[in-house]
Length: 165
Image (tube, rainbow, N blue to C red; front, side, top):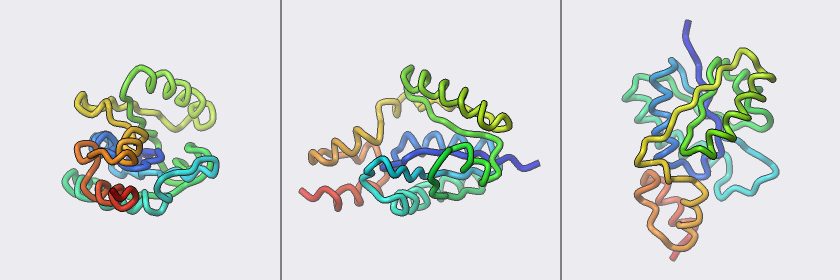
């Protein structure tokens, strides 16, 4: 039976850390759906549609190399409901450090109560990518710093357009 994984996040912007987790998720499931969260309570740098477009562009070659089926959806509301709409049985979450682990364990517990059939899978970030966060990338870019080591070239271009020097 084909296995579908749902990998939710804000991806504002997509980083090498996100793509690392996604690459490993391709090994766990036949189909991976990346869910771009559109939270009305947050003011993202990039609109949800633009984040989805960047994810498709950056991750499609990785999916092709892995022979994985891949898609990106924009969702609002509960992650477990978006995962159910995607037919997912796995919920993929990346971990960078202990703080992520503590938060994600709480979320996994709550999600398990809301959707008992959805199994959360934690994938630790590669050691060289653990310091990367989308928040730090946005801050560095806004201050004119070089973020090329942290994000794909397409994201570097979008950030440069957003924060011209």
